[in-house]
Image (cartoon, rainbow, N blue to C red):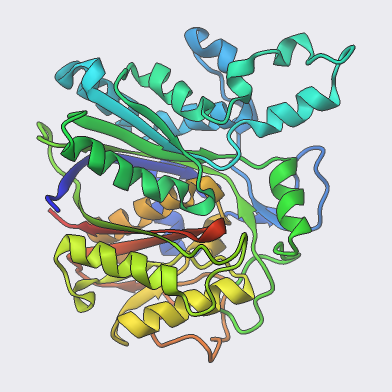
Length: 392
């Protein structure tokens, strides 16, 4: 495929707002996880909550969109000059030529939970009777209004692969000539449905997550927001290239991966093929690495079957928690930081390697000058996406 220019990107997680906070915490091996203190949602676990979301104020023209998800989206848009870059692209290309593609898993369902709990005579209370906030596509509608883009607007909700697949959707929109630029990203916030839903699936650990550790016993949930600006003919400096993407579906089980990692391997192989690269060209692989026993074993097996032993591959969920629909964009930002600065994150909180996992899984940080990085995002239902990025 023809590479697509990435001219701006940002991420906000439990590590703080913006890229500098992410880079500093990754380098210092400082986690953003904390004992669960989400108001009204008591559950013994650790979470990656973004500090200060509750106090974020939306501008007057977006006041009707109040929700935790939209406040986090607004906080994320403010970082690293991203909102200015997006609005400049809208002015440069024309609003109708800029697409918006946003991934999320639960959108503003936290407000929907509250609305049902506070029903008045069978109706939502007045302050939550805003149907556009409760719709699953509200995140993309919010970003569309915030940036002024009026091109094709899509919401991707394929669980944990959502905000990785936005890159593939955007690349196709640009390739088809339906847009000249695309604002892509993802935003997901913690709420009761997230915490208790994953706990009901027996996937939540009572301890900070330990991806690929022999004693791992489940994941830590987090929240995050991230965005990137893709342009077909960039007028501003290129930060990185989207060189390839691969998508696949296991069609195996609602929540378990294919036991032989068939879909995961196919996604990685397709991403490499579109990029025109061999596996040994990848300098860093950001793994999905949820810290659940089954997912990590299957992903590590697929990686070992495809990549040489010298690959540096890691999971960053020990820093941020699993940010679900935002995981694809957050971990893409980490891969792009690795390309720009040569910081290859290890796997935080993990100490005893699982002998079932291959030598590619690294626990310690490293530094290396790399030309290409890959990001994996594998969701429920076997929705897999792998992305390859290249340095300009």
